[in-house]
Image 1 (cartoon, rainbow, N blue to C red):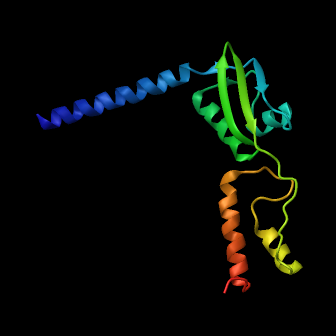
Image 2: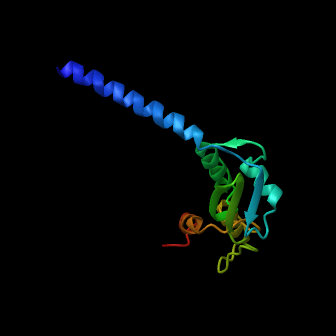
Length: 151
């Protein structure tokens, strides 16, 4: 009896797997138009290129997740929302701010200042990403500690 219920569980699991695989592909839509909202600095073509987005392609939910991942990896955006309706892909973005300049004040040695700036994740003319601030503060403190600034 236990062997029979084990076989039945395997068949049910297999059926569920096939069912969801089949229906996840049915949700794919061919994109005929792309609308990008709230982009100020980043051009539409740049977003299409980095997202690997093309018109006339049948996009599944996995493809949309890949587009989202590709766009987030650029560090250009704080938030991205994708929506497909009537074969139109709408991409609503919130861009990260840009850092104009990064400077170190209070350290007299130019060599030390250059070494600190070289190790930072956040650099002049790059996107400001809040999660990088704590990492960079740790790097600055560590660098100063090893140079003898903290006794």
